[in-house]
Image: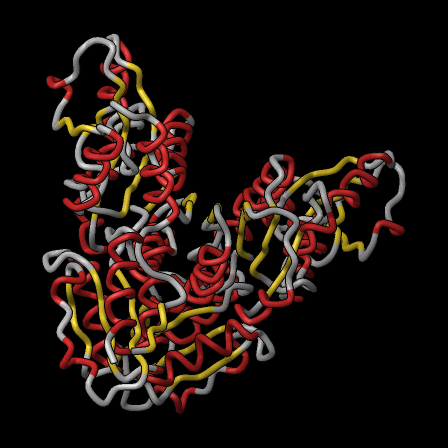
Length: 278
Length: 278
């Protein structure tokens, strides 16, 4: 069976970078799972002895601790550094940017608005960099602006990297109409949308699609839904063991894409197996 | 005839302020007409000996020169001050603000985008405050963004005070999608729109409307069009001499509004005359 990979799939730049860092620091521990993929976490444990800590209380003297792509709150980082642990910061540069923007803007007396999920580790980390914790506001919807009280009429705004631009603009527009100055930092990362665009493209060219990723991963499910729009025979699998030969009967070209937490080696195993099917 | 004035009409804050300044500086000259109303310019000439200069070449030593609400380009102001003239700056504070924003942002290496008419004196003045004349861009439509080349990916943007917010947001949104940082200053003045909103309101309550203003004034014509939407019997006049008694036959309440260049004394003469009609 002939296989064609989507133009963009799988890990984004930040995750690839963090995994490379983990491989470089054997015998270290990540603070929280580095990625939502148990197979990859197992691989890092087995091949590089990279362990997993769930909180600061796990850390022991002389540990090497890897901060994951989402980053962590400023004080957690400070506390980690106070302990005699070696801290390796694998925070995605696209997340470090909004952290530093919030820090700087807050120092310059801007009220801070973050478009994102207040429970998400990335957003918690970014918000923690504000000088004035009472003047950082986190919202998911433009309607939430009504209940906010900014201390200044100068607002600086950033977005969680995975958010949609359209909704960010809605929020920004409402801010502009009510404030003298709005300083808009476009911190949205294109990676998620590039995978989606590429999935949309390739699913039009092929007669069968295989989407690889966690069955509970919302970004993988979204890729699957996009593929189904153009290609009825689109299958969602977690790894090569789920492939069924019958899917490829009378088909000529199989498209492959993968969710943002799917490592290349799992994708390669899937491709290899499909290519062996007659 | 009973008369009701619109909640907002006539001169905006900046024009009222400039005329007050002109009255305070007898024997001065304005650099260009202070207002698009010949009757008011004549009044200032007759009552306060305020003259009219059309260019820097008119200025003589010891003249007192009044800068009008629109402001003037930075170098013109500098040249005026070099001459032995006394300069009285009646630039509207709502215009001084974007001038100072452009100056500061340009110094901080932001590329400057101005939403407005490049031929309008206000916009010419605002644009002149940029440090780098090659990196100030003036547009009227979002589509014009395509042809622009900014020197930086940090953009600061201001709008001509009389522009529409909706189109400003369209331009700002396009900028945000293409640039790392967009610093949006909402420099649009509500005065024009407040007159329009008030005209819309009052024209629903009355059975005849009189709109006072220049027959060639676009803002007066717009007021007239708005009034006609709700009140068929809406008349546009320049002064009280054009009033016709027949307009008020079988009517109970006459609404009055006026364009942004119509002085209060002309409005008062109109109101007085209508009130005398049975």
